[in-house]
Length: 407
Image (tube, helix red, strand yellow):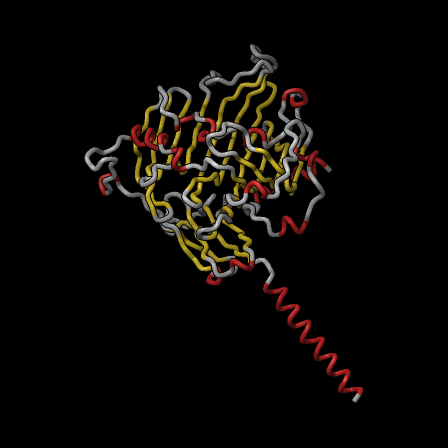
């Protein structure tokens, strides 16, 4: 009897553990991984969107086309969309993914004479008219009510030929809507990597300390500037019509001589700006605007804004700012001290539009202090399943080198 009683308890314990492990398995985060390649060239597709259909959750491929996408188990029956401008989107059920799967996307550019898109069905729009119409449609295409974006920020800086800074952090951004020309409030969630090597003494007095400021203060849609606003100087040309997520985009090239060029992608149905890229280049050390009394001359500036549609409105998906600065001894001096190459990127992985007033948000970022000095202790559990672009070999090498310098 004692043996049977013991066997009963062991059996009961086994059943309890079995259900416990089964429940644990059901609650585990689903992780998808793979690489996106061009079907014709087999080249990697960088910065492609990987997201759940009709959900605000997503991630982005890295520069080598690789991705890792973490999904909550309650969404396991959903469909993943893999898309990038210029390619036909792929829709794939979560349970159809294989581990480290290679997925091919087909590129496609539609010739202008194959598609007839008009505003009145009587007159073909010119490139400038398309941009102007898109500008007028901003109130219909972008949110006017408050919302929160959550994402991942990566900052990288090089002085001459030496990398001196690498920063990775997670943050939430509270926006009032596009009509409010005000910087969003920021909540820092955590820092993943932060390396700051010794830099040129010039930085002590002149360098901005907070890496997020340049990102949150720039936005063509909210601040009404750049190539999207119909101002004098800009000339536009329609370069093609390109597939994107089951629809089509106008690809428009712009130029504002002598310093500025732009590429703008506009939805052919809604006339929403989907992607805006602006590049400025100095000519013979003659810059477009930004020369400061501290001896800094901006000789190259590139900014990218890419948007995604959610519940009928366009929200920021990706932002990049990349600069080249020549630092001289003084304003009129010809003596070059150093050259700086800062680069900052923001990858949005979640959009919150409902119950924003009660959404847990803590405005805790001090714009006058570096992100590194405001970071909480590293949270392993948080970063384990946080959606960010997969680290490339190049980035790993930069971190490894900075570790040697800073240790």
